[in-house]
Length: 382
Image: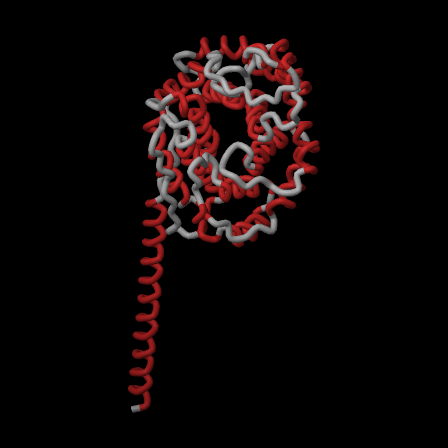
């Protein structure tokens, strides 16, 4: 009797163990299936094709030596300061304003690096050589030194000038070496302007347009890191931490404003992911934007009602700049890969309209698209 009872107990225990193991395996299979489904639902970042690159190259080509219309943005110290755009800015006088001309030149350099077989590669090279000469850059430096206001193109235009310098520095081409050397006096002046200005800026500028501090510091940081400019790099790190380290709960619900082409919340994230360690960034972003960690996170693209309106079309730029922040974050930290889908949605909304855009958007939006679809999305796939 005792033997039969013991046998029954052992059989029962074995069945219980078998049920537990089977149930655990089932749960594990379901979890793995769910994880695989989530991974499968993450799209690849969008990238430029050669055809798109050829089309986008037309935007800066059509305006980089087109003098009018032109918004000079200068402060006149006297009537002697008045001049034609090409006289005041012989290198960067086209594309409506100085900063748009600068990032138009950046766009062409970037496209040549990514697509050496562009249809108009020879034309692009010729125009770059014609504009970025030693003599022209000397005049640009002279303008900055004589401009009565130290705020000319601060900090948006400054940032794009350093981005152009960085792009030339990393381009293995004889033309790039010559252009970088020609540009260097202006590059040095702008880098020094950042170092002089940032300690005097007690409070960051948290807007969705040109003067956004985080955007300017992000591009300047890239240049400083690439060229080993330690003074600029340390200045940016110090001021960025002073500006943003204690920020919490960024109000995404307040964005976008009607004329935004940058997201104040996301540009701050784009900067802090650069300067903080992984541990520091994880702690900071958890307090600043915890919703980004959710795979359910979504954000609707900014809607553009009239692309012939120079301010309303800013929202197409917002869609591209949001996308480059999401792509950059996903590249650096794969746990944010789900944000690629959100980025792609923004690009899908604005990219198809770009080539048919009016001059109000066409003179600058191409640069935003190119940066989004070559500079950040490519890095995710490397």
